[in-house]
Image 1 (cartoon, helix red, strand yellow):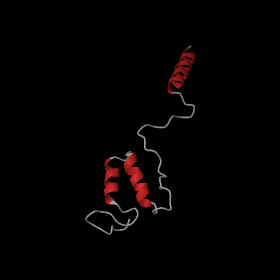
Image 2: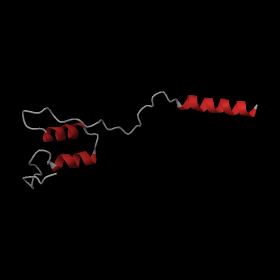
Image 3: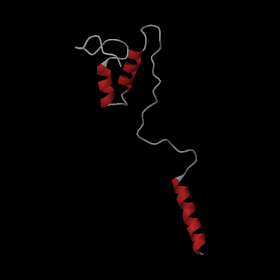
Length: 84
């Protein structure tokens, strides 16, 4: 990242607003801060906001077809069959 033009405000060229980066470091899921960064990185009046970042989530995505409870039941059934 390049140095901002105005060190007192942290504002300058596109993508150099340090206050936005500080807000994102404190709360990466802040929709307002992510929008501000996208607007800061976009050229005025010609580009749509550059919001291409994935949504942050602290939960793992749902698996495609894996059911932990069903797997546990199948393992127990298999163990019972082997014991018989």
